[in-house]
Image 1 (cartoon, helix red, strand yellow):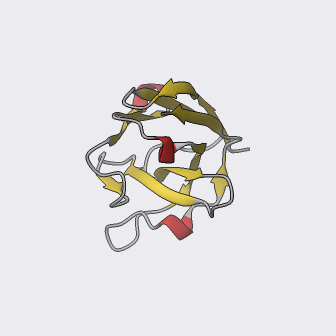
Image 2: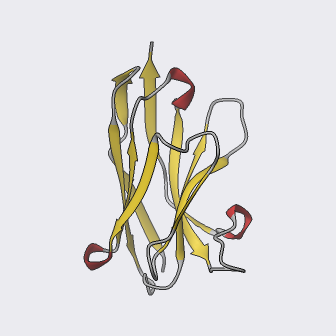
Length: 125
């Protein structure tokens, strides 16, 4: 079955950086969308970045553009999320997701159906 295992979360000071990893297994990695979502306490889950594994095209939420970078290592079936200039409002559980296919040239947030357990990012001011 589909397995997504996130790692790399932690507690950091504002202004710091983190790189989250998501190792995927149990399905054909290439040719799908993979995404990173986050859920802050008391808030709804939101999509922050996605990548189409077929050709590496990327998508970002407007709120994180310029600070978040999604990338992949196809040989390892792994997706990364590099976060720079962390802010306290980035504090959240970060989830990796897959199951979405490219639709009209986009990876739509609502199409993701498989989820990892999440990794916690905590940013202090």
